[in-house]
Length: 68
Image (cartoon, rainbow, N blue to C red; front, side):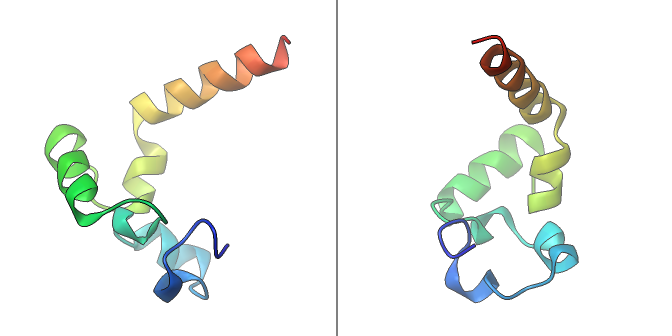
C-alpha cells in the first residue's frame, strides 16, 4: 500500500480510505484534487472509484486486455 497511498493513509481502514480525499492517493496533488473536484465533482477516493467515467474506462481497458 505504501506505493499507492500517501504515508499518513497507509494504515487506515478501507472505510477510512474510501472517505479520504483523492490527494491521499500517491501522486495525486492538491492541485490535481482541485481539478477533479471542479471537472467531475470528485472529492474522495470513493467518489473517484464510483465515477461512471472512470468505471467505464476501467471496464474498457479490462475487456481489451482480456482479448490479447
